[in-house]
Image 1 (cartoon, each protein chain N blue to C red):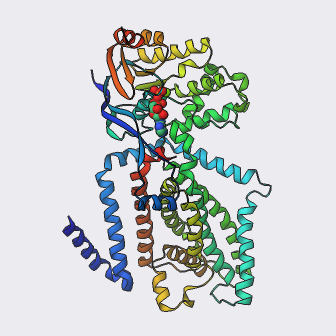
Image 2 (tube, rainbow over the protein chains, first blue to last red; image 1 turned 45 degrees about the horizontal axis):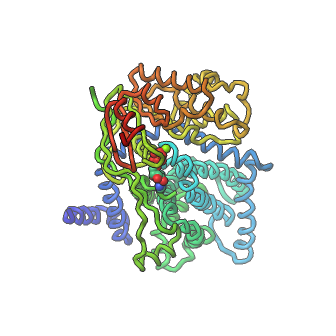
Image 3 (cartoon, rainbow over the protein chains, first blue to last red; image 1 turned 30 degrees about the horizontal axis):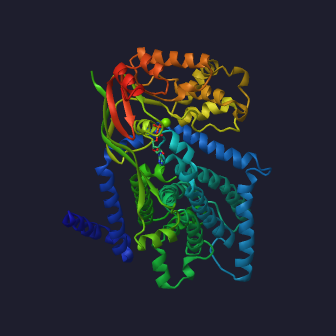
Length: 311
Length: 244
Ligand SMILES: Nc1ncnc2c1ncn2[C@@H]1O[C@H](COP(=O)(O)OP(=O)(O)O)[C@@H](O)[C@H]1O
Ligand SMILES: [Mg+2]
């Protein structure tokens, strides 16, 4: 068993070396290990796994209902409605642009405003979805104790809800981009049509993350507080307010292991710079998303039966 | 006849930590001090039961004897600590009616909400909408928030939605006690209709008369164990007069 494992690892190693370059060693091992482990876990439990997938279809209306309920609460009950989702990133952008392009003078191609906005939109989705997802299982306790419901519905619902919010905040991007396009600082490009791709990658990654968080919180309630701090650290560790070019070499190397860096960079490339990320970047993004998703699924499924005893 | 519910050596233990540990600091301190022992509560121990298609099985027992726990295991809400429980076919569990009801919402909205909680198709609920209102006798209250309802009215609504489809297995937990006697008759009629259509039924009830009238077989639980299992009349007589 172990021999097969090491064998597969080495084989992937040789195979992936040209793709991942310098960092290939860690990536090769990391991804193979996670994917193999999760793959085996799911394989040995495939019967109930298939059952879970089948139940997804049956509960799509529940998912739909929960998302619409959240959207209604968010957008109907506040006077400014959708406007807040647009205004929020705009205001943040104005403040930070003032600071970073005038005072500290960070120079990025396309201007700081668009640079920041793209990073903010992506990061905000992860931050919002994960913060919501933390307490989904514990707050669904009344339902989980009374009827049979596939429990992943609850974190998934929050991810979809936050995803819709992210789509609304894209309106802010369109405004700002149009402004800069008119003044001639940027030119629209066909690559912008690729915007759903990085968002999809990020969504899959984020769903996996939310599954892990929702599981942890059931057993340790104070993960909620710790996560807030981790998110702040993660934000500063991601190139949202600074470009990676400013970092020393060793930090740029480390940055490679931050999945958010890849997603944000992907998004910026297609939205602002008009370039299409390389095959390597695509493979990396897919591997990050897939590993996180499978890891989340495995953790969640291992523990979901005992949720009801702890909530 | 084929077996639709196959329960093999099922035990259910609830871990009740002496004090509730829900943060990591306490967890680690307790873990280091090896104080992580739980007060184990055995709600069910070593239950085995086979139910054949079309049977109507009654479950009797005093409060806390594990009847609801057993039904929850069968319907998949709880998974057993030990043993296996295999179920063939669709289940309608009438254990807690109106799960997911939002008391701020109207009858109409709650019908759709509860429908999706139970996993019904949207179109199906639309089609049966009038039937639900009529059965629950709540047409006059269609657009009233259910927080103003009496518990009987809420139970009626919950029952009407939960029994929309004819399942392979129907699970009824003490819910026939709610509602007025007219509604009870209506509920019983609906359950009888399902039975004659071949549905397998499990009933928990404290009304022994009802058990005797409906059931083909009775299980008597005591302190989480099967005390007796067998012919309705025999078990009921013994249950009512254990010392004779
Ligand atoms: N989630 C739970 N956590 C701890 N104990 C429980 C839980 N659910 C049930 N019990 C205990 O299991 C026992 C059996 O409960 P139950 O099945 O509801 O009894 P019955 O329905 O026969 O009255 C009770 O003593 C109850 O306190
Ligand atoms: Mg009970």
